[in-house]
Image (cartoon, rainbow, N blue to C red; front, side, top):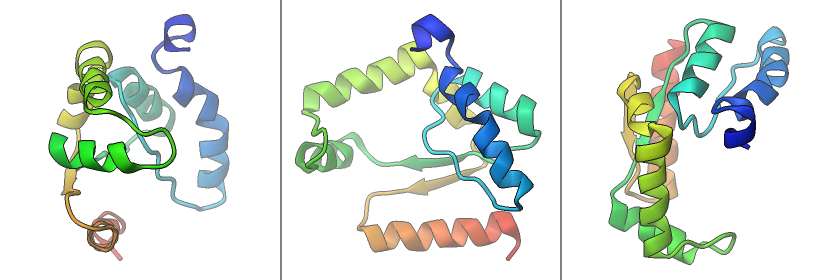
Length: 125
């Protein structure tokens, strides 16, 4: 789809839904902004946005993806996806704009705790 409709096509298709939630006073969390064009499109539409980088080592991600029941990845598939994200999509450029970062190498409870702390910080709660 990106090749045919542009790098920001997935974000562009969601702008109306995002605006509806914002108009209703609901905060919006967008998962997986992969390329600078998506970031730029969101910023142009909504002004200031906050980027949160969730990171985990290759080994941790490989172990998780290898055992998931829905669309498991082999080590080779993960390495290929990482290369695509870095070389074709420019994901590192989006990560460079992240004001916040969470290392996600623990269990799900640890991730939830870290996300809760982050959310309190960005919402000044």
